[in-house]
Length: 108
Length: 118
Image (cartoon, rainbow over all chains, first blue to last red):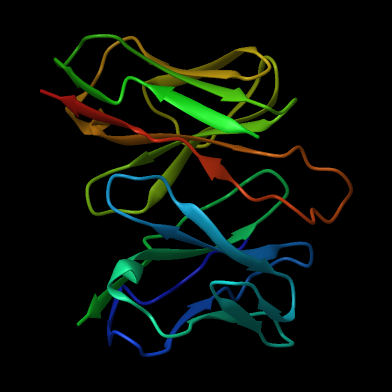
């Protein structure tokens, strides 16, 4: 089971690209890396998931190096509405473990 | 489309009282179901998960229990609440896993229940 480590908080300004890195040194061969976004008083929402290299969807990109011991969530041109907590987790079959996440604060 | 419901939305209970939180999922069959708790300003703590009716796995020993009486119903219970049980309780579901490498195991969360134990 992959334990994850990510920064507690980050500040950014509107229009900037934000990169949040997560380390998962003990990731297992069959673990995927998944990122979620959570707003206050709501459940987390899936952002993106990947196994290796790069994955891109309409809201974010996920970069995973060859050793898979870390991953970077990239949010292009953030807005105030992107202020939230971002979690990375390594999932193993049916189990999901959320750490404390990274609180992203986007300023005007 | 699939939807997940939780109730009640908020709950204030005295210490020592019982608890029952319910979660139901619509639009899917044999989902994996999860209960999480989130203390104020903290991350999500996985409490229980279930891969089928009557199959419950506990992640954290405590005074809470879970049951899955029907395929798409997941219940979180306690006989006697503690002050430390206060928090935001989230139910989630994910599609059942097939194969060794799960290619699609996104979790979908309910609206949550805010529990305050006084």
